Length: 102
Length: 207
Image (cartoon, rainbow over all chains, first blue to last red; front, side):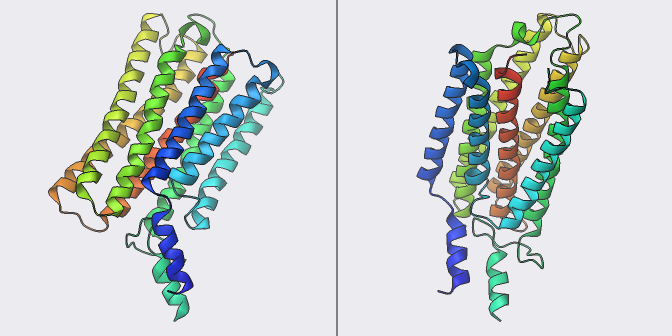
């Protein structure tokens, strides 16, 4: 089996069904933690905690369920280029309306 | 020769189905789908930014905190999140050429998606009865535009899933069935990650 065949074999499977269920469980637990911030006072940690949990969920779905972690890096570039462009453009747009100062 | 062998291997998708490879040695269909999803980030980014800007602009009618039902929306979010699991199981079954498993998981995904859309319709109806129409305030317009666009995306996903169930059951399919299901899966997961962002930024962060 040459290197290319090994690579193909690895990318064919990515994860097992049990692995997907484990990821879903972790996502469910993070969602429960997110919802808990609505009822429990986290003080100044509230906003950073929510944004971090949202980012973790986002990256987990993209990496494992959408297989970006196991796929060709070009796909990651395509997607994250669009995402980073969107975040940059709209952050600049919101900044012009002084959104982050309010 | 070695390069050709690598290209041939890499023209297989993540699930082992043969595809139309580009000169870069990757699937054109998949490349197109990822480009589309990248452009969708800009669409939803615009809608989310507009909402963030206008969420405090309530000249009349109820405010976000007066209408949002967090326990209900949390359950809806969980349902959509779990539909991503069933979708990935459908993709996995399709890669193993297990038509029965593929049909089952695609149907479960469509049902979970329909439950989410049903919940959204219920939520919109409840908001309307509380005096929050589309044109009531800048907050309501931007909220309905954002969540409505997302709901339409979920509905399109359900239609694609049900069409795929019909195609799998007929057993006649031109091209790679596993790759097509994988592309529908990518779209479905994208709709899910958009909701992950919407749920946090729109529902959980107070104005």
